[in-house]
Image (tube, rainbow, N blue to C red; front, side, top):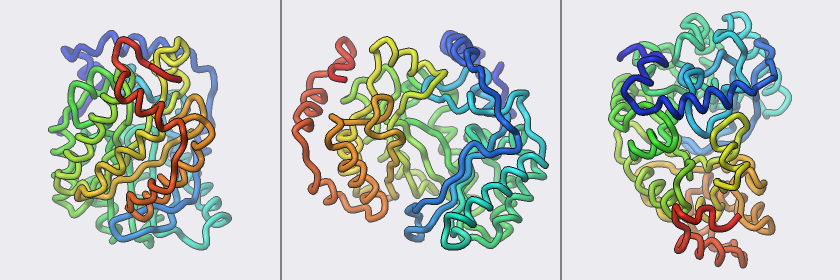
Amino acid sequence: MSEPSPEVYEQGRGMDAHNAVMRGIRAKKDRTYDPHEPTRVWVDEDNTPDGVRESLTIILNTGGCRWARAGGCTMCGYVAESVEGGSVSHEALMDQIGICLDHEAKHAAGPCDLVKIYTSGSFLDEREVPAETRAAIAETFSGRERIVVESLPDFVERERLADFRDRGLATDVAIGLETATDRVRRDCVNKYFAFADFEAACAEAAAIGAGVKAYLLLKPPFLTEPEAVSDMISSVERCAAVEACHTVSMNPCNVQRYTMVDELFFHGGYRPPWLWSVAHVLRETAEVDALVISDPVGHGSDRGPHNCGECDDLVQRAIKDFDLRQDPSVFEQVSCACEATWETVMTRETAYNAPLAR
């Protein structure tokens, strides 16, 4: 595959204005981070192709996504949590892994069967995670059942995935596709690649027996609630039809600092998606040939996916229940008067009056 660079991404793609705005917003960041400390780590449960497994989720602190340094996605503030300078040493990254293992020892019943590793960029980008570190991490977790690593399609190569497959790990690549609609991905998310590149990455993963977990974004900026829901349903269906893509994770947009979405939100031009929209999409796509899951980050807050405030936790629990059971009947157990407001938004919200309700 081609070796991408921020300069190449911008040339002739009509993204220069978005990137210039994003660089200006990100320049406001004033915090620094320790390269020996992971960004986050936690223990949870996840549904996998082999059933529900206890999971260790690791967000490594790296130099950050190279596309984000060019400007990047309109909703993503993760690069603001990255180490300055664009790179982190092998020794520092392995220190982070050690801290994560200590956390697991304190909070899990034993070594988790599932390990998920994210970098707020691309784990398979060797500028973020050197090949030496990738091999060492693969060896560290070689006794586990399954590992998930995050990457943009550009870096999904069978040789890089072989570090995990050769050690007997079931291996998945988490790809931030955001939407199956190229125009929405380009103009609303400001992401440079096409759906065809996602399909090519899936084929590359399949060639070595690895799987793909597609990450989709519910309600990027500049879409109304009904437009976002319609695009999400069609995107889930298209992803599920791609070979090797066995899981689709729907991520409702939340408002992160140092992003264009944050600027729009501050001026009243953006509302995070309704939790009713999340439930609706999960119901409508329950029969596709893939696991469809969602974990609404920041649910119930003004800056996260929310309903009226009274029913948010109840709907969130139903979503979590669906993730583990894949049974849409769980949503029959939740109701609230605000669902009528959501239905009105789905009928009447247009680009000229969005957001119709806060």
